[in-house]
Length: 178
Image (tube, rainbow, N blue to C red; front, side):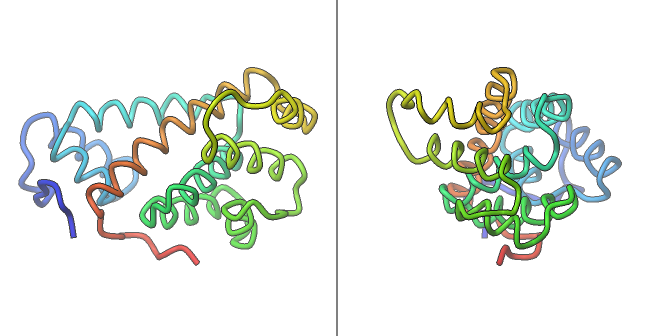
């Protein structure tokens, strides 16, 4: 149950109503997380949507973005984002087993995705300067400097929604992650 202000999307007005209308047209529904964000801060929802739109043009592909979001969400223990990105990961072509493996920093069967997940888990769970060997390892797996920066931007995006959903205790409207 939401801890922050929430109302039915059909009761929203102004900018929130416009954003909800656009989301519903694009994906057929307004996910609970977006509804709660928009009900509290249309500015924040617009920023999330703009960032997500930009990430669609990133130098990392959809599967890689979902691996990043799954790894960060697992480390944050965000049940909402784990549910959403398990579904989105399978729609991006990852198997259910690969989504679970990426979350738990286990072998997915794809060396490059495994290196990406390991790098993201390291970043999400440590502080301070990242040791050079970890940056070299992700580069050795085939990631470029541009892709590393796009991974960081993807992490920034999912960190916001993880934080929001953890504070709000957003109700799942996706199947729970295994």
